[in-house]
Length: 604
Image (cartoon, rainbow, N blue to C red):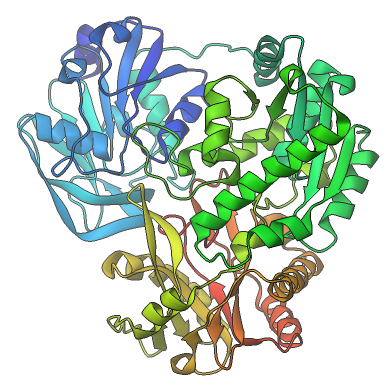
């Protein structure tokens, strides 16, 4: 079989990745980059000459359906002799175009599945007979195209991996590019080296490449940089100081009033200790809370927060009498910020990141925005931070969203609260436990699309957490009106709670801050803080007599595009419950058991 592939193959130096808008497309290029393989993203409608020099083609996933609203595609790209690998939507597209059948799945699949190899194949060399893969799809192949054969399946999916019998055309329904597919890297290695015939090359280091790009873009101008104190903006601050010199960089940390406990003070102290002397701190909390008064919709909150950042920046520029023609704006944007904001042509918007609101997107198109990390993921940023000599406590701090507690404090207008309380949701039976679909909404990502649905709450002792975590993804897959599963750790009967009208007010933000501080403190005391990617603490307007609920979301990930709910030791959970109850503000305490997909890391 391999001999035939080499006879058919067109020799080249890179792999072309056709971008159909998947949340994970860029992870494909990242996997190839780490293997020492050059890759280039191309549009589905690209002309055939763009493949000059390509050794193979990868077709990405997509948020759309190949049978309902397929993306326009130049089918000539599939008629070359180059090896082709279809991922999710890419597999379905290849099947559809070659005469097979694609249908809506009876059971949607989001999250882990067990892959079983049905016959040995070079694409799956190095795989175990059974292994974990990561799914995110609503459609699936139900009839193979002529000439194709199945090489692996899952319990619910017969055609999880397929190959043409005589041509170098392959497809997989799962996503090998995400960290949670056990042998995903091996699949890309097999495709690039064994099937496409490429060899690893030595590429220019990330630091050298970024240095060259920054010097070219900035020229003789200066950079005004937003510095939140998180790892992304801190690494950019260190990079720009190194590349341009501190006299050409103005670092601004804005205390939005939506920060964690003593966060702005700690940011200033930590960065000064790390040697930065060009950072200024501005307290703009009253302005942010004023602008957010009476606003409940999460997308509207994010938009206002982004616009207020720019308003504060303009005030500082005016006070300092800066000539804005000589300054560019800098941000710590990383790739997940862009793709989740719908920043590529066919990508579905999951949520608008505050650093990707409309005016900033225009700045980027005009070359007025300096974003050295925009092609990288969090773990790559952390490695770069260590290379730059930043302290480990800065590099490994938990991520905190730019809108801060503004998106971790859920809000409901009177109209929305009434609609949620009167909605009729199907009951869901989960073994012997009592459950309720709660009158709340959260953002999810399912099949590369945004979902905005209810959580299912289960009342069970914490000792059942591992069993319920295993059930969680299946529950979401089978019941389309929910996108999260949460465990009630403590509180009043679920049936008595109702959605409450609530906005971003100083008392609510203070309560969210206090709850977050308790959870973070106990994670550190229990020595589990460093095991987590992050642990959002969400204030939810659900309860009795105007009281609220709090949801803890321990989460583990590598690059935030996918991840799993982390199960904390019971002794840590017990201390968290005791201290949260001491605030005398909550009717319920919940624990989020949802992986990504189907749930995003944050609730909003």
